[in-house]
Length: 426
Ligand SMILES: *Cc1c(COP(=O)(O)O)cnc(C)c1O
Image 1 (cartoon, rainbow, N blue to C red):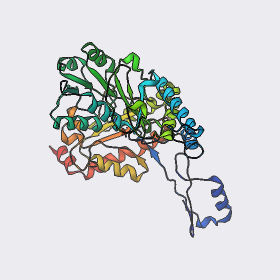
Image 2: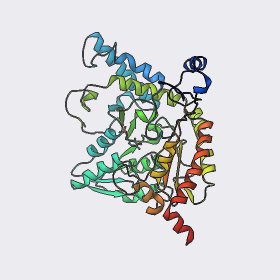
Image 3: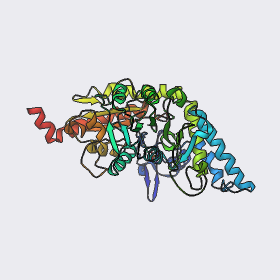
Image 4: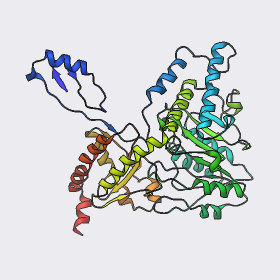
């Protein structure tokens, strides 16, 4: 930062929020060197499982639908028809990206709504049982809990220490009153990728509906709903560089589900409400870009992830959480013994690094994440969790910067930690 009276200018290398080299040059010419103070502000965003930045091309694709083409897709004049054409094009583009049919895509307000719809509407009084996993996202877990309160029955499959679900166990829990199996495609905290194709095949054989929360998977790994044999799938635009507040539910042709939202006849009478055209167009654009660059992005992201994992695992009393191989390309998640995840986050934030933890003080409970407990970690260890999630906008410099800061942060926090010091003595 250059300080000169009231003039503040931010200088940066890459990744930094505000900079304009012309301004800097201007000031360097005008301001006596003695008054110039320079600080490098780094900003490294590695919380891409929480949300992602919106691609520039996505913003450009959305813009006309706020300004020029603001028509309601249900109106019959030209302006409305333009919206309706854009809506249907977005629907077929998205369908193509996951190998679905156009009429199998229903737009929603995001991943949470899609999960609520699939779960709450699939059960009925004569088929009142649901099977799920203990590591689902809250949108699935709490939807199921609300059904349980109404008298429905939920059973949870067992998982191993990597968070991997056993298809055989799913099979053994199924009975003639099971309405639905809901198992996520990839876990948002620990990154484990589940054997969806096997689980879907078991459900199909037993004639039970199968839903998967694929919010972390779509746009990040290959998703082909036909090959996987899925009945219902949830996705969300803001997890793949699209806008927030828009998502979709894939509903395989032939699957009968009641509407989620009553009102107008939008979305084939299944989900009422004037369509979020700009958001939907943005979602389609983002998914097209993400799936178009999937292989190349995966390679780049995996390389960064592996470097972080290999180096952070050198810190003593550190564990990798999630499966060592069957994991999302961008996910590196850990537990550092003897310290609190929240403290790590605050120290990282002070260095301009945005990451995440599974010890959820954010949810106002001091309980560690249900995912970390479900993979068998004791409370004490689960409290020291950290999740780093990369996207293709990150680079080697980001990785090196994290590796420069994080081991020192862990060391410093451990020196201050009564738990750590006690454990070291015993
Ligand atoms: C983010 C997320 C959701 C919720 O999606 P929203 O669009 O934010 O409602 C659901 N499931 C998983 C696995 C997620 O990561």
